[in-house]
Amino acid sequence: MTVSHHITDDLLYLYAAGELDFGWSLAIATHLAMCPQCRHRNAMFEDVLAASLEDEEIAEVHTSVDDILGMVQGLPSLENTPDVEVIEKPVFPKPLRDVAGDLKDIKWSAMGGGIKQKIIHEQDGVISRLLYIPANKAASSHGHNGLELTQVVVGGFYDGDQAFNCGDMQIVGHESPHQPLAMSDGPCICLAVTDAPLQFQNLLPKLFQRAFRI
Ligand SMILES: [Zn+2]
Image (cartoon, rainbow, N blue to C red; front, side, top):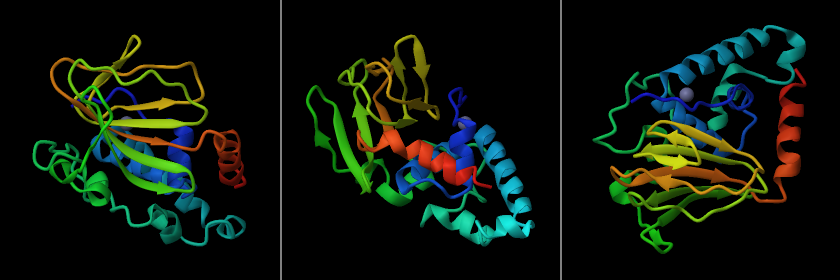
C-alpha cells in the first residue's frame, strides 16, 4: 500500500495537541494506522509538544503528556500499530474498528445506486460516517460549507484528475462541488468526517488560535 495523500501539518499538529473533536481525531488515527510517513511526523509533533511541557508557562496550557495523548477519548494507542497494516483480515484499521466494528459488522443504509452509508459517530455537529461506493459508481456531486476528511479504507476513488487509493486521505474545504468515482477494480469504502455547514466558519480559526496560543 502506497499512501500519497497525507494529513496536513496543521491538522496533524492539532491532533497531537489534543485540539480536535472526536470525529476528526478518528479520521486521523485511522490514517496514521495506515501511513508510516504520517506516524513519523506525528511522533515528531508529540516530541515537540512533550518537550515544550518542560516550560512552566506552557505547562499551564497542557498539564501533562497524558492529557495530550489521552485526548482521543478511547481511541487506541498507536504505539503497537505495525508499519504495514494487514487489511484483509480484519478489513478496517484498528482505530476505526474500535469505534465501528469491522466491515462484516456494519449495518448499512442504502442511499440509491448501490451506494450505502453508516453513521458511526456524531458529536457537536461533527459526523463520522462510512461510505460504500460500488465499483465504477459515482457518489452524488456535493459541495461543502465545512470541512470534509475522507479516509480510504478499502479500494479507491477518483475525484477530478486525482486518484485516492487505499490509505489516502482527501481533505476538502468549502470548495467547488466534487464527485468521487469509485475505481473499477472493486468497491470503495471510506470513512468520511464532516462538520455542520455553519459551524466551519469559526471552527478552524478557533482551533488554530487555541493551538498556537503556545
Ligand atoms: Zn500519511
